[in-house]
Image 1 (cartoon, one colour):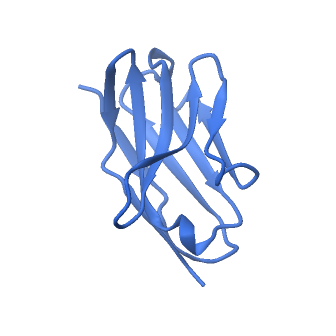
Image 2 (tube, helix red, strand yellow):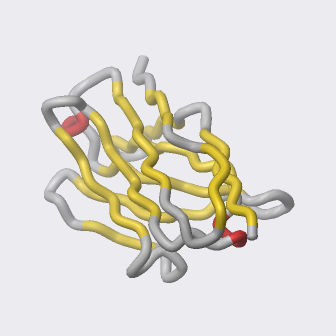
Amino acid sequence: QVQLVESGGGSVQAGGSLRLSCAASENIFNFNYMGWYAQAPGKERELVANINVGGSIKYAESAKGRFTISRDGAKNTVYLQMNSLKPEDTAVYSCNAQILRRQWWGQGTQVTVFS
């Protein structure tokens, strides 16, 4: 059973930064995609950024220029560096891993941005 453990959430003032980490229980290059999703109160979960096994990256429009997804194969960890945070970034951020039609989720980490 794949396990994904997120860390790094918290409360930060607008304009600040946070780095989220997602530690996987197995080699991250086993997955076709790994990524980060955000679910704000009353809204559906949405893709923030993902990276495929080949290193191609996709960002949500709202994340472009502010967030950076990266990975460390030696640590089996995927990161989301979030800069210039805005109150509208407030959400539960969840790590996701996919192999073909199978996917796994972390427990989520709360990010709160206050003005």
